[in-house]
Image (cartoon, rainbow over all chains, first blue to last red; front, side, top):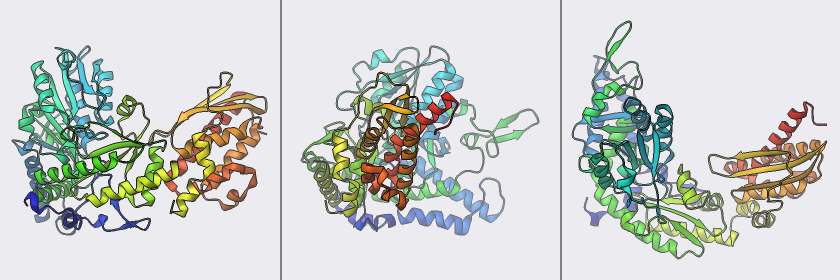
Length: 411
Length: 153
């Protein structure tokens, strides 16, 4: 598909959930940063697996098991392609981004950190990229350090060289902020981190959705993301890691699938990635995510990105005309992804969300699992509209109209 | 406002309490304080009571949150000044019943201004906002009764 042919109205038709009314109004779904809707192709792939190929993977000789294993492993290859991983055995299935980050914090962190070592994260992070490191720091007596934010919610990198020390062992940073949409210069951060010998984990929960990801170009050591924000099902996610690091790491869960030989007192491990995939995996989830990657690849991530930029430019223009609105995050569209966090006059974000919901417009209200970001801006919550490949300018207009209702009530 | 449901949710009395909350200040002489937060949405209050014997001598709160949570706790504190513990407990229970859709409770004049919040019961995801202050009150009463080892009567 070329950019000129891009038609969000036609794309919408691929998503059954979008074809409904809510509170008597056609649904406008602007909570994509929380989770995306699923195209028919993904629903069909999951359905086909359960209707036709349902069997456990990697352990059966029979035909159904062969088919299930094939589909499951093909999905791994598709996902590897999505982030340009050099080797599909570097793709580990997880429940989502959260589990992927925890896997590194525990599987890599416990063996590699000791008292006085430093972990560097940022104030911008989602709780999923804060709390696992707090737990690791407590268990290893390592020190947790933060990159700060400026008034536009961008990382302050002027003092990066001084925040990184010869004790920094790991830097964990989001590719794109879920609360503000800030796009972080992860390539630059990675280069600086590597210079002091630290490894780098990128939280790609939003990044893998909104921009072309090439883990080899980024140069990072781990990249984590979720399927459900990427048109795939819930309960499936990915940890990509550099092969040598994954091979050196200890397994975090023991069980079936992850072993080589089991003895009475000890066992040996299967090769990567199976070493990290104990138990029957989320087979349907992986197949569904593979179908999502196929679907998105057909449209093209560059086209999706261009469409989102157009929607963002339109939305920032329209929203900034709303009296009493305060928009958080970078003012430059080059530095932000398809997320707009805002507050409106005295109206609390929950009230904004309720009033919009009565108009069929779904936005998120709250702290967006980023309480440190909220604290940075001195607010307890914001309302957040987040866009995706099927968002139209009419959706943005409906949002702006709904905000008129908020002003009518709250003044 | 074109939606009757929204009109019933955002009554003037609620908006007025949201804009001008009553009893919203630190109570230095408090005998009990309950911190209640909703981790899902970030609403939070600290309810502070000065309890003397069988009654609440003073009730104040500090906190932040949506119009529903803040108006409900503001209205609640106006009812608690000088209230007997047993009456405060009954009020909390009655209000909770109204929030869970009990229509008889919603007709109960003893709820007074708090009946303005009845519309919240039609918005299931917002009920916890309205109950934040009353949940704190029930915790405070439980703590108080536990401390003296007695019962509310």
